[in-house]
Image 1 (tube, rainbow, N blue to C red):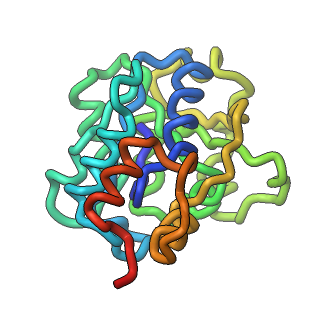
Image 2: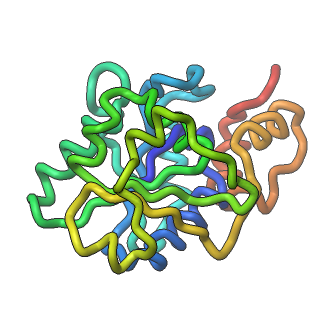
Length: 209
């Protein structure tokens, strides 16, 4: 599971998903747009349009799936509920992974029912090489004794562990910066998949009027 607002999906999101699948030997990566992110501001376009752009971005990429389950639920998009539904579908022995970036990981202890995340899945942190700072005390307590050193050890159990994973390609693309460029009518070429860029420009999305 790779969640996010995907507001809009960009090449950094998609490349990370491909490299997660390769690095962990996953059958698939479900990219799950949040309907109402509890800790973020309101996305600029509708959930349905963000999902449509995600599907365009994924195209026929093997192993990547745009999963609409959070858009089909009422209320805020809590990751613990999403993982619970994935666990129910996949059974007790499947290896489930929730991947998130380092900035989101630092806030994990403030998420809704964070201990439930480890009941349903492993947590994989996409590491940033410049982050060596100590963890906040509440996060340190949450992850104490859970960290493993490699993907092989992680996959020995269905859930409950933490792995920090450095991806080969670190694409420093931010959706915020993409939105600013679109609002200012500047080029976003090579930041977004071509099909996503074309749909955004055709629909005049994210533009200031």
